[in-house]
Length: 517
Image (cartoon, rainbow, N blue to C red; front, side, top):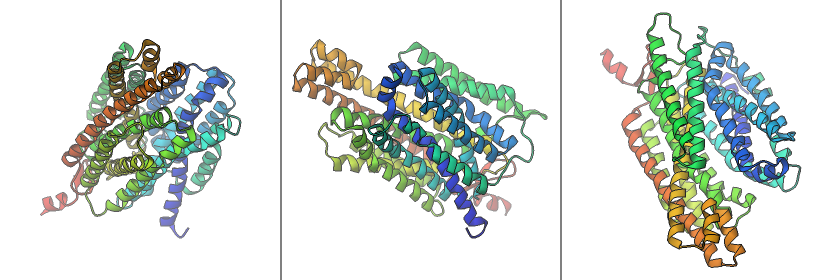
């Protein structure tokens, strides 16, 4: 290291290792579910809650941990979160019951909130506005790497070792991140101790948790589920009340809101955060459906399925890196819109997939989807962070993560609903016998298994074709969302890099100079 400039980039390595550990844990769980079902006697509902419980705690904790970082020190909260995450990982690995494993996941959810929020906050603290887009690009590229590494490493370890090792996989990563972070990441906190705002804290935690719960239930049972609709509606109302309360508190002379109300007004921060969520929402359908396509339609194993996702991830990494390079020369809205258009184009091509589509075709369109996602997500996130100061970077980063953590369940619920509706309609058109139709309506895997048991290859192919038709419909819906994202980026994001004025408002560079003359 040669001076503080180089030190900042080494510190970014600790930040990236932290988020890599969180990403590995989530993707490893997806391939470990069949093993957990056998080892712990977990039902399908239990498996859902292993993921849903993690998401609920994470969503509820993002804003409170952001406040904790601003009050008590962001490095301190990051290191504490890494320790709790390691503890949760060990608890999962050594669990002998469903309850013990779920407890480990809840600890990981709490720690995951602290890690992801403080990691994003560190980008604001460590890097100025000129360097920040490049840092965001590197940060996003590392988060994308966890997507294939988890299934590949997890599948390999599950086939050779005791299942608990897959949950200990991230412990060395966490320890290394903690050591480097302790040495290289400077401690920072708000110069003016932020208020606790108990009403805002409770409203944000409960509202986000209710929204996530409703979206998870919608993805599991469909939008016709009363508890999904009620929970989502109540959660949205509570979040709306939270925004109102923050604005009200901000107008009081002695008010100390949890979140600066100016961040919740239309502007680059709000639109950048929202568009980053839209990019994740549009892409998540690919991650949700392609493993089923590879394994249930084309007969690929778990490891092979992970390997076939590599072009998608490579595209994401390239797109994220390119976004950082373009930031100094091209407006954020142009880069974000280009990313959304590439994402939409890739999804449209993917909608033409057939049960027998070759590797080259699939690799091509998934790489295009990945590149578009990397561009759109990184550029919009950088736009949201542009002009932010280190003073309240904890809660500001928490708002970005709140958008981000909602996009995954929402995208899964939307694409899953479209896929299931089209899949069931196609099954009806195929006029399958009841012995095959009933299992096929439950899942692709049950349907193909029933068709094989009946000794009817034609019926098995009909089930697979119906699933691919449903997948195509979901991709077209996601492509439409991405296209709208492109138009929204052009309309809402600044044409030039923005900075924060003393009053907290973001303005385009050049505007202030023009006004001064």
